[in-house]
Length: 143
Ligand SMILES: [Zn+2]
Image 1 (cartoon, rainbow, N blue to C red):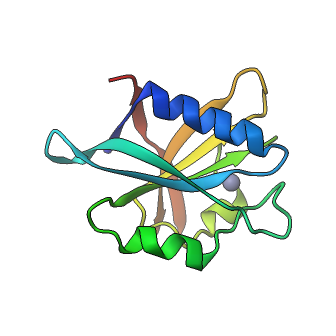
Image 2 (cartoon, helix red, strand yellow):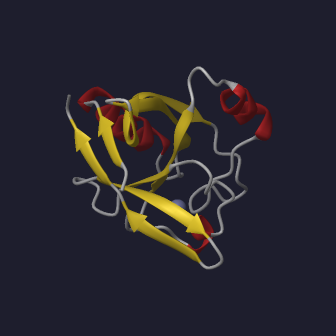
């Protein structure tokens, strides 16, 4: 079971960036590394916003390979999460989310604005083997 540590600053940054992108889905990478020297504990360090180039960005997200590749190649600052927002849907993986090709990234983040005054973040691990499944991850906001 993975536990993810998120600073309050990063959490607030995710919300403000995603609010700016409404009514479209925001997306980006989460960089970080091991926390406490354990594989199952992840400390988040940075959020990298990436452009949503989907033709219908209000309910899909797609990232340009040219934009994302440099981050995937950087082993010093590993990508530990894929983030996107749901402007109106709940913070649950959609049918398209489950067809993701991103399941090798350890965490899959969804920030929902279904209730605009109460954005809701959920983290998941998505497994593809042989049936796609997902389960919620624990996370801690703060130090
Ligand atoms: Zn989604």
